[in-house]
Picture 1 (spheres, rainbow, N blue to C red):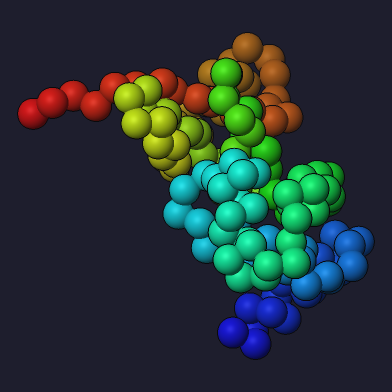
Picture 2 (picture 1 turned 120 degrees about the vertical axis):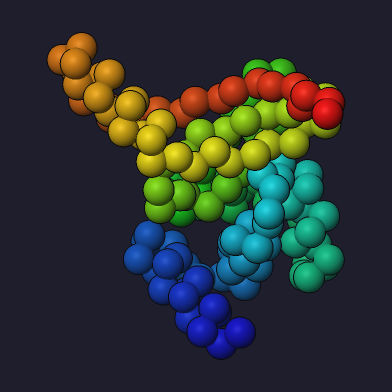
Length: 139
């Protein structure tokens, strides 16, 4: 636990942010999330650890963490923004249209093909975000 606290503190400081308890708690909750929670879900999870956290604090903190590059805001049409720790490797997202689950698709093959296609067209990728909406096949 002490190592995690030191890592979070250092990550915040490296990003030019003060390492407040509320920022560290929210960042820790997000790091441990297996899903891609929205602000309301993060508020509930963070509040369970630190009852001094308000919804306004969650929104301000998310904004500061995003601006600092520590987290990424995911916008999926007609849904509340969801958040993830800024990934160390490129990945896409698959959204289950029935359950709303957001699933990370990490594939070296997809990344290689994307790079190849873009390069063939005379471009280089600056950023990308691919969202695939799908329905699970029964069987």
